[in-house]
Length: 372
Image 1 (spheres, helix red, strand yellow):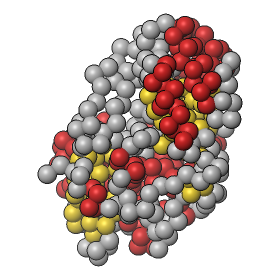
Image 2 (tube, one colour; image 1 turned 120 degrees about the vertical axis):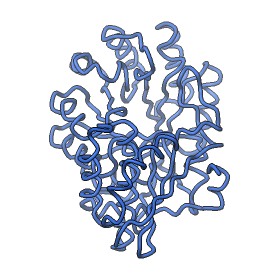
Image 3 (cartoon, helix red, strand yellow; image 1 turned 30 degrees about the horizontal axis):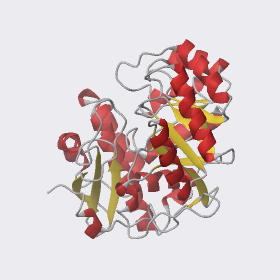
Image 4 (cartoon, one colour; image 1 turned 135 degrees about the vertical axis):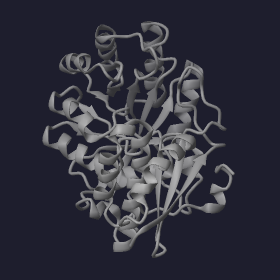
């Protein structure tokens, strides 16, 4: 079975604000889907957390290496792409495009074998997992309303991130966290994401350590991106002293970039994003490396339905997995598939067991969000 075509589908019209200072309009293109077609009629779908223009550029580089390659060997094919393009982009948008291709090839592999991707990744350790609703912080009254809405949708865990947390003063940060805990009560798990990958992040280890102590008083499950994403020495120091688990890793690409963070225990929780870091092939290797070093893996996913489906398949195939990230509300998750994702009464998502990623895009719905 050979690869004969790749269709690039930039998504617009339902984009969720990512928290950056300039904000993001719904018409912004931050996410791209790709479809990989084969000579035997099987099509796989992948998701990429980057714009269609960057994916187009990367595919111009990758297509001569990909054309007529096997559609049933995702790890070998995407590693070939990676090894063959170091001189044009060791990471960045080239690796992001490889990520989407890898996910799509795993989808094809599963469909060709009549098996869910999780089984091909090694086997199923679970058939459901808890999603955490991922939202941005807001002013206290607006935050309270957001949290009530997320809880009403069935989530039993919620992560709040980025502005205005960490952008004013400590008293305001604590007000936000206190508001959140009072709103949802003690039975809902809460996580805090400072958003330290924002440009020109001003805070260092002392701020992060003091903030972590405050978060511990409100039983926060983990503290994410408390420092700039390249400050590995700062993370090592913070992780050793923080009373709450420290999480990071969403901006890293390629498995090699994750090794020092895992081997040096720079974090308690490592967060690979399969729509950026090389796909399911790289994420599986990262996750097993983390498992072997007793570091928890929780996939990052500011995502689409395709990215969420990939994260669910990976979570099924890992011995220890506690959560998947679920951006909410998000049209690109909730309005793109034939069958919607459903959270059960205990706050869990069932992991799809149909062949491939286990989801089917609804192309009529997709017309609302695709460019051209």
